[in-house]
Image (tube, rainbow, N blue to C red; front, top):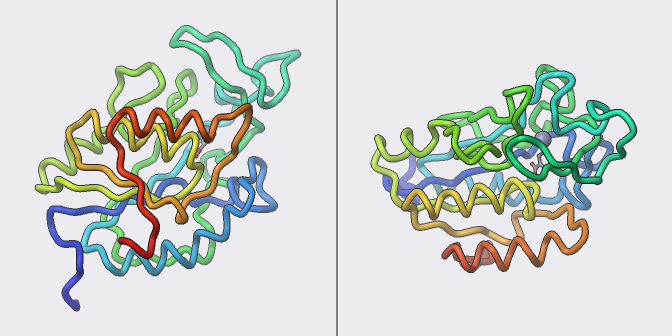
Amino acid sequence: MPLKRYGADCALIVVDVQNSFCPGGALAVPGGDEVVPLINHLSLLFENVVLTQDWHPAGHISFAGSHPGSQPFQSVELPYGRQTLWPEHCVQDSVGADFHPKLEIQHARLIVRKGCNPLVDSYSAFVEADRATRTGLAGYLQERGVKRLWLAGLATDFCVAWSAIDACAAGFDTTVIEDACRAIDIDGSLSDAWLQMRQAGVKRLRSDEV
Ligand code: VGL
Ligand code: ZN
């Protein structure tokens, strides 16, 4: 294998590049598929790549259809806090949950599936929305000596942002590659997310600076 620019103490986390979040999908992020060639290219710089996969059971609590009388993109109060309701997306074993067919990262080491608890969502690849249940990703990375993370994928203002903020909180030096992400952007969620990421200590780079 040729020497990678980013070695054993670095990892690229590729967040939720799945059909449901790409044009034609149930929760399509505008331009979601545009990140695929760039992420394929970036992945070649990294010895360690982790993929995340939103992976909900049918009838998941984050689906508007699970809350009679409600509509997608509304928010509701749940036992663990406020939850935005979404169209049904990334149902386990469905085409929507598959990775985009052009995503090509044969050397990815680990796939983290999240949002598997029917009663708790998980935007973050590290900690579920109850803010207590951990996915094990931080432990995996720490055991392997990874100290620096770069994030790319979908959506900037939800799963990328929450994962990046939790990565910082877990002690990783964390950078989001902004043009390798696309956002949902509802009610100012994108500018809020960048503000919260900055306050948490997340760095922001363009892919040509990586
Ligand atoms: C996501 C909304 C619901 C994401 C996942 O990947 O950003 N957004 N589930
Ligand atoms: Zn989801």
